[in-house]
Length: 339
Image 1 (cartoon, rainbow, N blue to C red):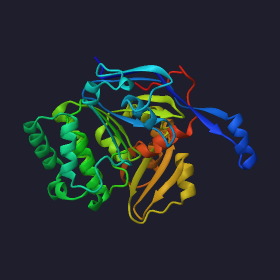
Image 2 (cartoon, one colour):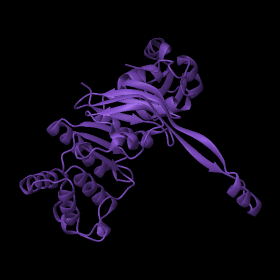
Image 3 (cartoon, rainbow, N blue to C red):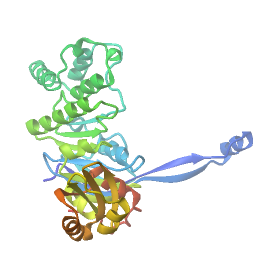
Image 4 (cartoon, helix red, strand yellow):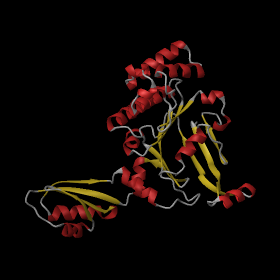
């Protein structure tokens, strides 16, 4: 049985609007104009126990709104959702004690007190037994290398240090479902890597179901085999990460290392492969060609140039996602499933 089942989930906001000026302000007191903004429209998917799913989309696509509905912070306009046997927006105490929502741009810890004091507040809220609290805190401290951070006021922590402490605090009650909304935003590369390693370790230790939103494709590639892509509030793709590349990447990149002293102009090379030169150095060149033309292009390069080495690669995930976002949202029921 799936940990998360979402059927036709939708959220529409009623937004007031008026023109500027005193007259418009007075008029709005009598007759307020509003418009409907569909943040999420008829989204359906399931997430299995222990699965880590990337939840992707551009800014304003509806990712955070969806996670807030699944965390019980928002009530949907339409549709249903079942998360580990609960309807999230009913905010059952047992459900709130078994899930966690971590938002990279939100602060949950108390600003002026040591981190460990906030953790003790969480212990009381979630009714964690003293022995369990001590053991879990020790485990999280070791995994995230919190150490001296526990005794510092939150206001004295760097962004990376605070993010580690925020994540640890959200996991003290060992949630079975974890919603991560941009957990590595603003962090340096080393800290991003540490957070990714921790999420993978937590998933392996507890079997928790994880939904992850991130603009950093390194997060997605490291943690997720499956991705769900939404665009303009609608489901655009649901399937394996590799299937996303296969479905939406129309090009491949061929990189050839050539013998020293070989000369060929970019225009001639582009004409040879019926593609585009995208990168060049003294000893190698990378061309972009249509996926269907890749075998022919590789054969022409090998036959024409003194090739030392040749590699063929799919485009970077970042570029594939950009191409996906550039497309218009699929019509409802159009079958934008990739797996």
